[in-house]
Length: 148
Image 1: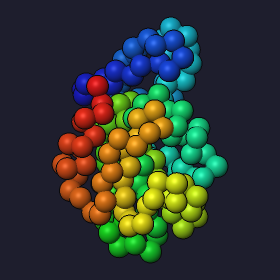
Image 2: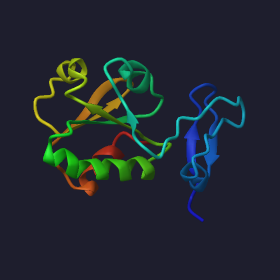
Image 3: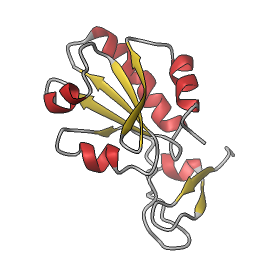
């Protein structure tokens, strides 16, 4: 059996143990104290210009945001790596994907001129930027600085 995730409740602040196998089975965990939903997802969420504030800026967890486009070859290389990291870091980092062709306002807001660009955001503010295809180990190393 794998180690359970320790997930802090955004509503009451309680730390909850969440078994990884329950997350992988698609169950939505709730806080043991206040019963609020816990921010745990083994898959990246789709982020748009309209949902950026709710999905990224108001996230209680640090966010890895993959800025990509379907025609981009390196984006298709990095995409599966980002998907793997979403599962491995569930409960510690929220992972999102934003299609820059369909959501130009957010791409312009962050000055994204080259893709793939991975933004690491904490409290809605950019704390790191990874441009171009990078190995999984490098992306994970950069994320470790924001996960506590």
